[in-house]
Length: 480
Ligand SMILES: Cc1ncc(COP(=O)(O)O)c(C=O)c1O
Image (cartoon, rainbow, N blue to C red):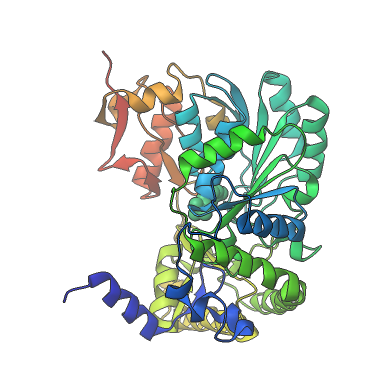
């Protein structure tokens, strides 16, 4: 019997690496309080479908209705919609249900692909807020009130504003102020809080969209709470939200056979959140204080400590070590048995959750201390050329968003790959995203300018990672 996937999972289990990765339950460690009860002890018995007594997700009126109202109360939302296809389904449903084809929405450029998919499916016109990049860490910052004010003045017809809060690196937006503005202007506020289901657990964390009164807030429970992969919740509040259209869209984007394991996993995470969440988060943040202090001893690795950020997202800048983030991640995994969440040329991201223990944080620090010692012992620091990926594009590049083709039309047109130099004035067929900072430089339908080409050539020569370039070629719309 071959079962290649099962064998891989079995091997991973044996390796038993420490997880600074999603899912937030950290290999079930967070579930210990449930003993052998709960989902983990009853996987197959609990894997039911919509039978007598289990209600229907598309039109809940029984136990699912009760369960989601219970979860909504814990998170202080008006309604909670269970998602079994991650926040991706929630993002699609929350945007498409509150817009009509051709309408405009205001959003930062560093949105998740599901937002771009919503723009394509809904034939929406994006109005982008120019992103700001932290010059020290080369990661995108959150969205400021000033930028949203600017955007709404320039594009007063926008139906609403979408924020990614917090972003992947833990940077939040000026949520409450932006909420007050959108409310005053009668605009919808969508909060993509895929990375922040845990925010309500401590006042030092950025504010949650639900707490700020956002109209729609989507949270991947599986990323930062102890829940199974794909389980997520969409919270609705306020009077602007059309609930009927929301349910219709959810029915389009979710399976008609929703997993009761995933839905029970949401409930189990909510139970843990309520019972022990605050206490565990307090302990985690105290552990973070100690970790941050220790990292100050290191010369080659710096932690991002921007005020007000979500400190459970540990961004470690690696450029001073002469190694790329990818090289650091490999070393930490292979030599120290620790899984990190993400590596980019300029750094690595470790995700801590209430499923991690103090000893995990301790091991994380010791691993970096060991790497620093190894680098000094090898004399690597003296001999190596420092790893410096190309400079991230500045704000001015992202202003060049003049478009000849709507994003939906560009998506459905015939496309071809051409070399970067031959792409001048062509219309892009897909997104082109350099890392750092991970913000799309060009999106489908946008005109490729001389500035884009010069930047891409510079990044290519510096061997900077650019998603959307294949063998140095770029996808463009075929002119008919
Ligand atoms: C900002 C953001 N939004 C939405 C999603 C989609 O979440 P999910 O993986 O739960 O579908 C992601 C996934 O990484 C994300 O980073």
